[in-house]
Length: 157
Image (cartoon, rainbow, N blue to C red; front, side, top):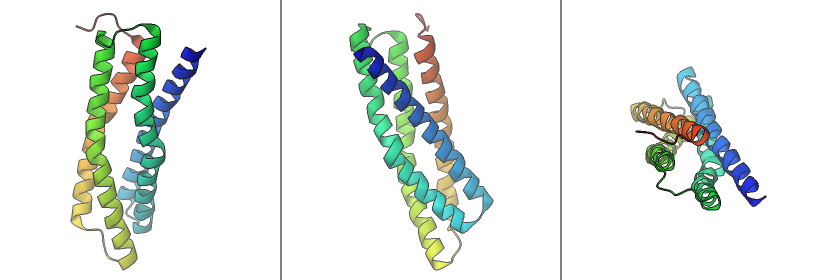
């Protein structure tokens, strides 16, 4: 029973992690391209909040539940699909850390522009481009991680 409870928590946290990432990325990208400063301001505030409320806890829960499931099932962490899942998770995390910094900067820039009635600085759009492109390998890594979790291939190479 404990295995199924932990597995459910693992699947739910993976869903929250992936869904929040994809949802906030779409929401922010759409607001940035719509051009409405009030919408951009609101979107940036919401994206940062969603990262703290949903993404961060899921990032912590994922490896903890994954390692516990491996332990319960007696699957060595050196199993190829497990090893590569952790590598891919690390790649996604390595992309996410600078994204958090960029989101905080863009949130602050949007806030200042909104309060002052000024245009967003060019740096905001530079940050937004970097933010977007960091999301591409993170998204691919997460999709591949999901594939490994479902397929659990005996041999990878």
